[in-house]
Amino acid sequence: MSLYLWIILLSFAGPLLLSFDKKVHFYTYWKSIGVAVLIIGFFFLIWDEAFTRWGVWGFTPKYLLKIYFGHLPLEEVLFFFIVPYNCVFIHEVQKAYFPNLNLSKLAKGFTVVFLIAALLLAVFNFKNYYTFSATTTSLLLTIYVVVRKFEWFPRFVLTYLICFVPFFIVNGILTGMFTPEPVVWYSKFHIVGWRIVTIPMEDLFYNYSLLLPIIWIHEWLKPVFSSEKTK
Image 1 (tube, rainbow, N blue to C red):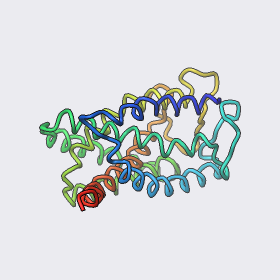
Image 2: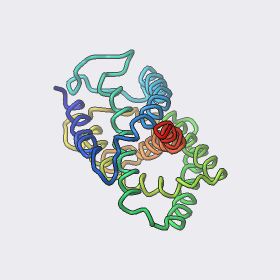
Image 3: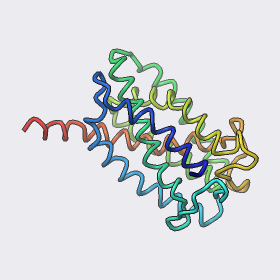
Image 4: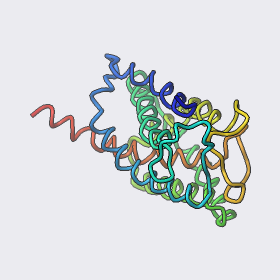
């Protein structure tokens, strides 16, 4: 197996096995998660394919199985289904075990800092494809959910912050933290160049933009599928 596939499968093993935890019963949410991941994953795969074609980022062949869908390796396609599953799992776990947390102050502080950072990066780096697209997408999504005052957003903020730990490990490995060459490389012409060790700063906004609408759809569909079970 390829290094990239090992990373994806190992990250999936824990959440999958713990999906049957009696307190969380995460497996009961598979329908809403599946729909959310398929919808958002479709659009992100188009984004991914376009940027791979344009040379914004790419993949080092020796770390891949060399099975491709368009210009995307199989492992990259799996990324957009497995990583969101893992993050939604974290979202539901912390809701089940810590249901009474008051997260309003955390959400407000995070939102202010995040919006200012995204806006400044977008305005001053509009020629960098990755920087501009990732920050603009996350900026618009955040403004919309804040204006709509979705109840789940403060909980999402905590989920996103917790997910930074596995994100740092997985993305760190993929961007060359422990290998001579990165599994996923980025063109220096389309990123700011600021990195968290080896991880491009833009990945923070990109992963946020992936996770937020998935949680949104998941939270919207949960009661729909729950009502079906009671009929």
